[in-house]
Amino acid sequence: MRTNLDFAPLYRSSIGFDRMFNLLESASRVQSIDSWPLYDIVKMGDDDYQITMAVAGFTDEELTLTSEPNLLVVEGRKAGEEDRQYLYRGISGRTFQRRFELADHVKVNGASLANGLLTVDLKREIPEAKKPRRIEIRKAHSAWSEPRQIEDAQRAA
Image (tube, rainbow, N blue to C red):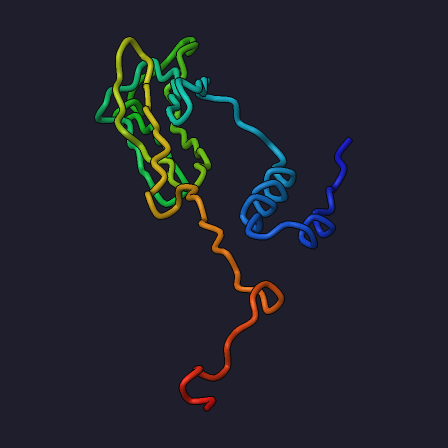
């Protein structure tokens, strides 16, 4: 059973979350989910993440990683397998494309392939200008606190 969520009430009380609401709406519209290749997403630290994908049978030349703003695309494409005649095929070598939505300021640090597992290291790097900063509260001059002298004592005489 699928229910459509209405995010309109949240727009009234939140500012700057438009992208998140759009992601939630698009995720709720996804009809079929391809579960191949299998993968894990692990949080390694406060700002460090790791994606591990099971890509048995693929070499590093057959895999392509593309990093776009807020998106990581992993593609696998086997070449030269059309001429083989399989009696049984249990190890899938089909073409795939897996997309991972990345939060703002999450960057791909590197990738490695070992023992049929593709590992992608990610890190959130918040620019200094975007980090929280303390705002100084200045003392305001109140009209009620001290009377101000309008004329100088020498000029009044």
